[in-house]
Image 1 (cartoon, protein in one colour):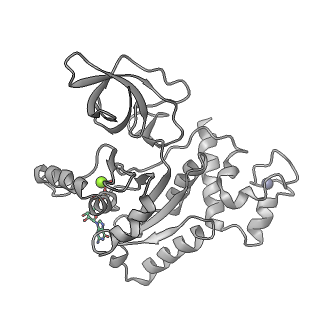
Image 2 (image 1 turned 180 degrees about the horizontal axis):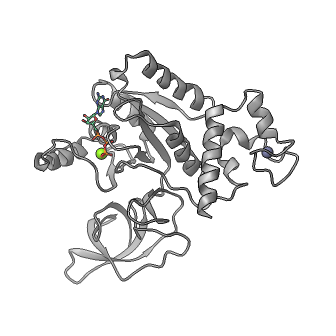
Image 3 (image 1 turned 45 degrees about the vertical axis):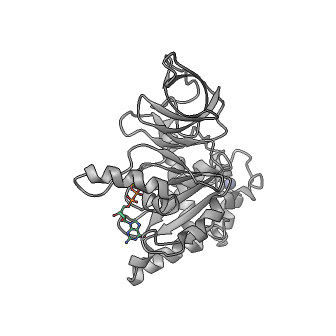
Length: 308
Ligand SMILES: Nc1nc2c(ncn2[C@@H]2O[C@H](COP(=O)(O)OP(=O)(O)OP(=O)(O)O)[C@@H](O)[C@H]2O)c(=O)[nH]1
Ligand SMILES: [Mg+2]
Ligand SMILES: [Zn+2]
C-alpha cells in the first residue's frame, strides 16, 4: 500500500495511509545515489509499505520518486545534507529583523534552493510588533524592496499577537503542502499552533516537560489542516540551507532577475563575475539588479566553487 510520511523521529516513521496512520520502520538500507544524505526518508515522502504480522506496525519497502525537496547542510557530517521535507507545493521562509536577525544572504540561499525546483516561495516577516527602532524598520522595508519586485510575496505578521491569522493564512494554504522554514526562534511553531489547533496540543504537552518553557522543534512534522485540504510542515530551525550541486553557469538561472538576461552576455559560458560584455553586470550597473542580491550571487558562487 502507498502512504505519505508525516513525521520522522530517527528510526520510526509516522505514515498516513488510506487505512489510517501507521507506525513504520525501514527495511534494510536504501541506496541514495545522487545525494549524500543523513536521512534516507523525509517528511513528505510517498512510500510503499506493508503491515507487519502484528498488524500494528508496518515496514517501508520503497520511496516513490521525489518531485522536489529542500535540504539543509548537515550539522554533524561534512559534505552531507539533510532533507527537511519533500514533495511540497510552496515554501514559506519565516524571517525576523531581531531576535534573531535573518540575513539577506540566508534568504537568497533559500530562494536558490526553491527556484532550482520552481517551488513558489513567500517571505514571512514575523514579530513585526516588536519593531520600533528606525534601523529595524529600515531593514524590514529593505526586505520588502528587494523581494517583492522579484515576485516573492513579503508578508508581515505577528504570530503571537495578530488576531486574524487564520483568515489571512488558511486561504493561502488550502489544498497545498506548505513548508515553513527559517532560523531557530523566528516563530514557525507559534504560527503553526495558531493555524492548526490540533498541533498546539502536541507542543503544549512537550513544553510541559521542557525546563526552558520553550519548545524547540527537533524533527520536521507535517500537520493536516483539518477540514481544509492541505498540510503545513513545521521544520526545525536551521543555520544554513544546502544547495544541490549547481554548476557555476547554472546558478544565475536561480536568480529570477538574472534569468531574463541569460544568453545575452558576450561569452556563452559567462559566470557574470568580471567577464567583458556581461549583460548581468550591465544591468547591475544600470540599477536593475539589486546590489545585495548580486553580492549573494557572488558569495554562493564562491562557496559552491570551494566545494568542487
Ligand atoms: N514578540 C513576538 N514573539 C514571538 C512571535 N512569534 C513567536 N514569538 C516567540 O519567539 C519564540 C520562538 O518561537 P517558536 O515558535 O518556538 O520558534 P521556532 O521558529 O519554531 O523555533 P525552532 O523550533 O527552534 O526552529 C517564542 O518565545 C515565541 O513566543 C511574535 O510574533 N512576536
Ligand atoms: Mg519550532
Ligand atoms: Zn554575464
